[in-house]
Image (cartoon, rainbow, N blue to C red):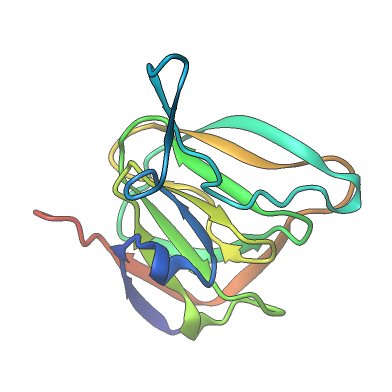
Length: 170
């Protein structure tokens, strides 16, 4: 098998746009509510969960930290919905994605590093790796689809993919 090294890029909305949305309040419009004691940010992601009689499912995931370098052997995608992850603590995490298609295209895999104050909303049918927490147990608020129907496809990667830790001081 061939081995490919992927390097993580900072998670930026423009670079991540082909895969979904970056969930981030920085630079976003807001409004004050509750007598000026709470700042509200609306429309941070397009949640898409209603296909085939689906319903929104709100969950908390606890992701154990992964050792780096990480070998990527498979990706998953959700044909009936988007899937949003937002960190509940400001801990950086990695995001591995590939463009939609019948199988992940090895040459089109991308790795992004969240600042820990950014989340992601994977667009329907976006290939992605399960959560990759760094350094410590990390909790995420997750919005995805509940309901009947198969909503998780799995694809095996035809190479031993490895990406390196690009954080400062690593």
